[in-house]
Amino acid sequence: MVRDLAPDLVVIDANLPEPEVLTLLEKLNNGSSSPRAVIFINTASQKRRAVAAGADAALWRSDPSQLLVDTLFQFQAKRQPT
Image (tube, rainbow, N blue to C red; front, side, top):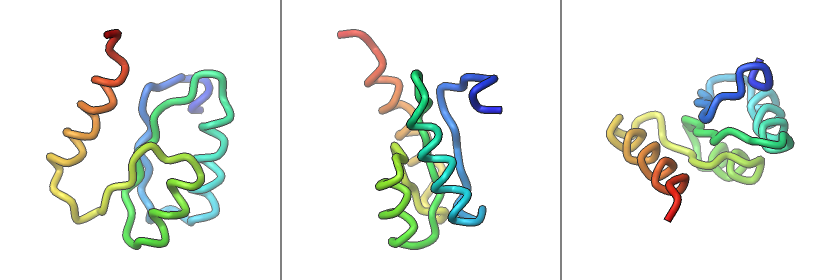
């Protein structure tokens, strides 16, 4: 589905089974035009594994929503030509 739609961003919830999350992250990073991946995590170990598998950002589920907005603005700023 991600390959067919070619989104710029994929948001993943860590409540999915972890093997599925890690497989998804690895597959996202194997494409020619990989989308950014943000994952909401519950534990520090989830964060380490998600970042190692290719997540662009790992946010705590308890983080304020503004942090997600700020992260998305940072992604956009990195895409802007200088």
